[in-house]
Image (cartoon, rainbow, N blue to C red; front, side):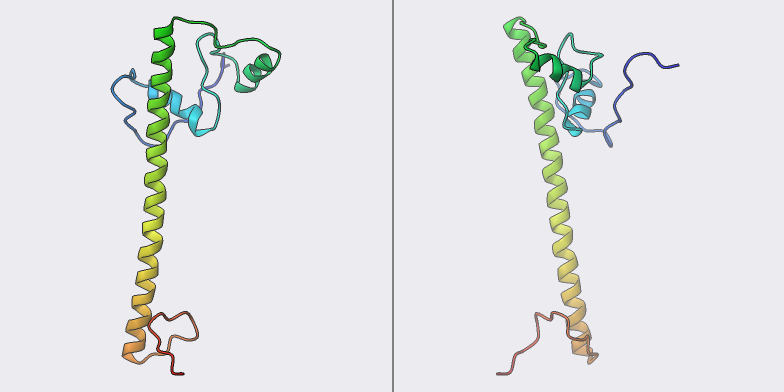
Length: 133
């Protein structure tokens, strides 16, 4: 019988979040970021994001007041994870856009080859067709 909160689903693959994070720390923070949830602060571990939000709505300060340097370190670590996740999302977007362009070029090339050989490809979009007007 499990006790305590269940771990969040793992992030896909291994991503480098920078050297300032301890082993596994970046992955743990990234799991919250990927799910769009609030990253728990010290003293909040074991509470769900919804429970924390309820307490904050009631006026409790869940993150607590902490030494200025500790707060700066926490913010820097979170920002490292956010920037790594942003880079990852941008790389995926660029990959998908490049793939779309390649598929379009290949389709256009196939139509050109078919037209050159003499096979009619039908009324589809043909960027190489001439318009006699």
